[in-house]
Length: 275
Ligand SMILES: C[S@@+](CC[C@H](N)C(=O)[O-])C[C@H]1O[C@@H](n2cnc3c(N)ncnc32)[C@H](O)[C@@H]1O
Image (cartoon, rainbow, N blue to C red):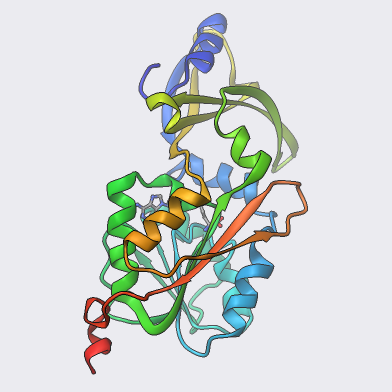
């Protein structure tokens, strides 16, 4: 494998004599593609809105991206802070809800954030927790703990069942993605590494493949994680054994929602705990 390009994608580009240019999925051109790929996906919205209805106070959407989940939460009348490492991703959200009084966007790393506020609900959608390695997840849990109100809820999603299984094998396929002038064909490639503990994914627009031409290869690197592993980590980090419930999806993916609360020592929470 070259950098974050899978062997299969590298071979495909070499066959046509195209020159790859790696581009993170969540920056630059990648953000427009991501929004086209998942923008219309309504998965998880119903479940996070249901959790939001039970809270009066602030909600934190971690790795909020273009606001697929943030926007319906804000539109339902909730005050939401959206954090993301990518200003390019957050700019989609800012454009969707310009100067909205119930929305605050903050560029922040989910592995280490200090917002100075406490949230009744902290969410991570789109299985984005799998973007983090073990150390990153442990730092995330500590950051979440510092920002939860005493009875606050932490909820996030991960793939389950056949969807989780499909993340454990190499895969190369063509996908149809909505474009400005109709659907476009993209080549998708997934390769496992670290003995199956992580996966590299690539997308290339088929019409970009040309001899001698530079081709943008959108890339992302994710961990392969089960809900059992994440549940164990949560308990080890001081959270309650999470409730694991299926998310209803229209596209047939199997997604699980993990919902938990802090049950460790109160003094390890944010400053409010000692108030
Ligand atoms: C799969 S997208 C999810 C976007 C949105 N929540 C949704 O449901 O569609 C993952 C997001 O995580 C962000 N991200 C990646 N690493 C991050 C980090 N360390 N801290 C904060 N955000 C991060 C990316 O910029 C991207 O917007």
